[in-house]
Amino acid sequence: MAKPRSTPLTTQLELPFAPIAANPVVSNAAVLQGRAVPYILHRSPGRRRISLSIDERGLRVGAPPRASLREIESVLHAHASWVLRKLAFWDDRRAPVRRWESGEMVSYLGLPLQLAVAPGARRVALTGTHLQICSPNVATDAVSALAIHWLRGQALAHFLERIEHFRGRFTLEAVTVKLSNARSRWGSCHVSGRISLNWRLIHMPPHLIDYVVVHELAHLREMNHSPRFWAVVGGVIADYAARRREIRREAHRYLAD
Ligand SMILES: [Zn+2]
Image (cartoon, rainbow, N blue to C red; front, side, top):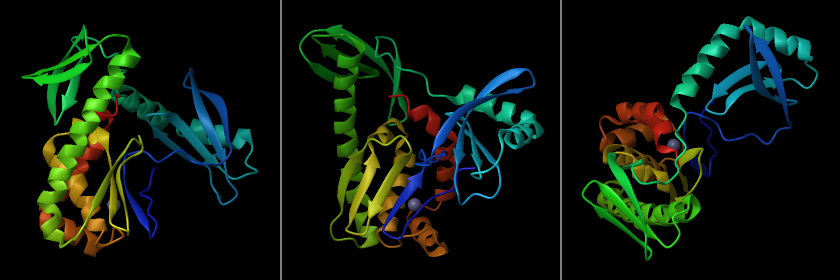
């Protein structure tokens, strides 16, 4: 299953799924308990066993270069119930596709906002529980571009405020922040003092955003996930473990855009 990845110079707060691998991939399908199940096959020289992993994108099989399809299928059949159960789990959790139409809900700092889209001069405004978007063109692409531009602006302002709030706890002189757009991670940082935060964090409740901000700031002190690193995080956010679990459990909700 997806394992946290980190390197000495940059480190990432992983989502519950791993970034797409650069290995050769082949699409296949197996029939498991009467159901056709497509899967992506990754063959890599370093691998000695056949492994299965399932996430929101479906089933992936890792195999040694010379494993036969017959061997692969026999592993799939041996784990058919597990595979089908996991696929059903992810089907239930897949982020909804947003069409950026009036009446749709968008999460903002953990609170539901209802979209109100109207033709007019370009404008985005938050009024109570409504996000009002006026656009000369109300097609999905035009409205989503406006809305995401606004969300990114709010995200940056919120992140800067939270970094300023926590910076003193880490005795950090200067921290620069950059918005990222990755779907596979919430944050990353670099020894130079730069941290990247995913703008989609703005969909999350503030206590989860704070966890990600503190996690990345803590990496500027400890570039690893050692007990020392977690002690630094825990010194600022005592219940960090619960917040970390909550992010991993709820991540799928915040990835729709
Ligand atoms: Zn980390």
